[in-house]
Amino acid sequence: SQTIHQWPATLVQPVGSPLSLECTVEGTSNPNLYWYRQAAGRGLQLLFYSVGIGQISSEVPQNLSASRPQDRQFILSSKKLLLSDSGFYLCAWSLAGGADTQYFGPGTRLTVL
Amino acid sequence: EDQVTQSPEALRLQEGESSSLNCSYTVSGLRGLFWYRQDPGKGPEFLFTLYSAGEEKEKERLKATLTKKESFLHITAPKPEDSATYLCAVRLGGNTPLVFGKGTRLSVIA
Image (tube, each protein chain N blue to C red):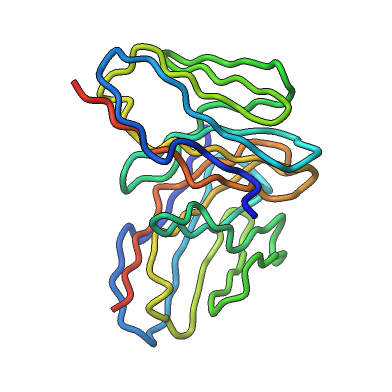
């Protein structure tokens, strides 16, 4: 069966510091991968998605970036965090092809102070 | 303009009091409608996928239905453990990402 991992689970960072969140998927090959941010009262906002290694699509312009160095690894980064980057970050995967259900990881709670 | 609207925003039920949550969408060319359950501090958990009007799916006390413009999540005789936020999402087609509603926060009181 497939499993999805995210770490860290929680993170408190000062404004201006860098960020690296990691997501890995087990039990499937060539998945579509997604990064979402969830803020209170705003629902899930898609940040990035990837259909393959090195292929990243950005949905919202911001100071965040994403990379996919390996087939089942997806990384969310920032060079300098802003207060507005605080939120609950979720990684998700789906089968290649796009028509399938997305399955979410446990999330990372990021607080920028 | 929101493409996916969920109502009500919050719902409080007594244990055993059946009700329905609504998800309406304005997009055309729907390629799938998805329901998720999310507990506080956790990632959404997949419940159902519906693809065509008239389709229904059930899981324990939950039943999801789909029409051309909306979906309902019916909760029959809910229990306190059904308390969660229920999210609805739609897919337009191809490799397009899901579009999520803001969710309905359900509280079931014993």
